[in-house]
Image 1 (spheres, protein in one colour):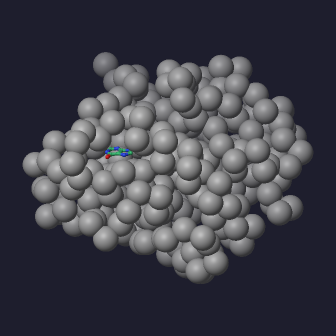
Image 2: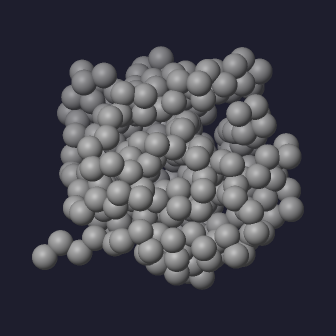
Length: 275
Ligand code: HPA
């Protein structure tokens, strides 16, 4: 039997967060690898672990802290998920919709997703960033599979302006004053946790991908379901398998993310201030 959650399930988590912070944030940011300095720049922070939020998910990845941080950035009220949930951890696509639906039930209407990604486009280099123009997700089901919760969004929903154009325009104008080289391109989801084969990367390029990664698309589709404005920014940490000698591995991803973290976080701060 299908056992979807009803609206009260999301409300319970949202009410808990609202009780802890006392306001409705304008913008939520899901921080991926390389965003630690951004988290440190949030003013008047209220921090609490996901584990304290009823009906929320619990992080399993040691490099993703798993804290909710509410506060202000340039006078704007924000809420950050410092640490995200991935399919490769064992969550189903449907479970991965929970955090964004909870943020929507809290009243948040604007979402920024950040991630680390590998470059498929040979004009990109590690340490660059990419504004996500659109995505490709050919694998697995939809996070909205199963009974629909009409208070959150409609059964069928369009994704033609998935990554909101006006937010991409803001990001592009911030890119002009960033110290990073910033592209705009297509992100393709791979489920991981293995990195891709060289043949998969050649296929991704043929399909139109500029970068690949193991996150973001479930959250993006959930945001579309509940009509949130959405921006996605990828930090390019490596050239993908087959585009460079040697094996892509997690340590290269974390090393480049650590080196680029300050510039990436400054770019993100500038975007949040200007939204
Ligand atoms: N592939 C998938 N996910 C990633 C990569 C990659 O090369 N780099 C960072 N996240």
